[in-house]
Every structure is written in C-alpha cells, then in structure tokens.
Length: 267
Image (cartoon, rainbow, N blue to C red):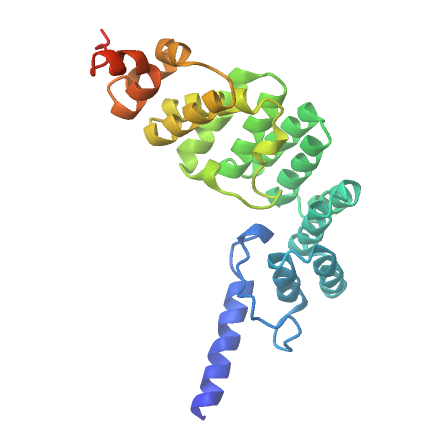
C-alpha cells in the first residue's frame, strides 16, 4: 500500500472513531472551517455536525433529517435535529423532536435536558425543573443538568433549592458555569431576569464550594450591576471564609484599606 493510501485509511479511521465517541451534544462538536461538508467519506450526521459548528442551523437540520431517514431509531440524531430547531428558536419543533428522542430511548438524558431548556425558554420554570429532575434520575452525575436545574429553581425564587443544585454541579465539575455552548448544555445568563442578583447568588455558590477567585469575580459583577454593596458583602456569612483574601478585602473594606492600609481582622 502506498503512503498516500495509508494516509487516506488513517484519516477515514479518525472520522469513524470521532463519530462513535461519547460526546453526544452538538456544542461539543469542533470542526475546522476548511472541512468540506460534501466530502463523500463523511456520514450525514458528521456533515450536519459541521453545519452546526458553522452556525448554519437550517442546513444542519436538513442533513440530520437525511440521517434520520437512514437511522429512524437513533435518539442521538433526533436530539441533534431538535437542537438545530432550538438554535433557530423554533421551540415547538424542537420540543417535538426531544420528546420523540425520549420515546425512542428513555435512557437518553440529553433529550430530557434539552426539553427542560425549551420549557425554561418558554417561561415554564416549574415544568423545566421537573423535567431536569427526571433527567437526573437517568444521569445523576451530569453537572450540566444540575446547573440547569439550579437556574430554573432560581427563576422560580426557590433560592435554597437553586443553591443546592449549583453546589452539586460545582462539585461534579468546577468549570461547569464557565462553559458556553448551545441550549443543550447550559442556560445562558440572559435567561435570568435580575442579573445582579443572579451574579451575587453565583458568588455565594462559588464561595460555598471554596472556589475563591470565581466567587470574587461574581461579587464584582453583582456590584457592577447595582446589586449588593461593600457593606453587604462584608456582612455576608457566606463570604466570612474569604475575609483574609486581599482581593476580597479590597472589595469589602475599601474605606478601611484607603485610610489605614490594612482591613480589620475578623474574630
């Protein structure tokens, strides 16, 4: 076999391996812009993934439908079709596909997670929370689903339940809130009405997980949005363990630092 022929075999093997991988959600797809979606060696699913990576959602949906005709019982493909509709804000169409994917495979928690995201986007926060709980019965260790549940509980004003969900998400994946992807993985901050309150709440969640740098980041964001003040931050029980951190001191005790150069010691 010639060198060129070996390289072609290796490239095809890499494509097959990637297609069979565990990454189920579109937002984990990473394709180089130079890949030709019409290349004959690519399956319809992979071509659809490339269109999604290029944010060509309508074209991706057409390709996923082609793939589903070849594999009508693939929950993964049906779910991907739903996400393409979701990105086009065709929420009713997306919901139908997620429900269909769940009927095909009632162990496919991604479909329930995404269905919960539709309910949340439509303002049905209680229904979203119930759907996320159903998904967690299948995938109890999914940080993304726990974080989505927390966001829906926050929107309902169920702050204690939201805190529990956020802390569990952080326990499972300390980077879960830094991930930015499609609706399938993370509810974006724009879905929260009071950003300042949300940022402050996130700061407390990070403090509870002892992730100090991100707690400080969200304290700053909250104050910039007009929620909270240095005095409120200084008196918050959730932040007591941070009182010896210089960056926190500059936020919570600005006047003391300016006049004395040394913040008060906490008892």
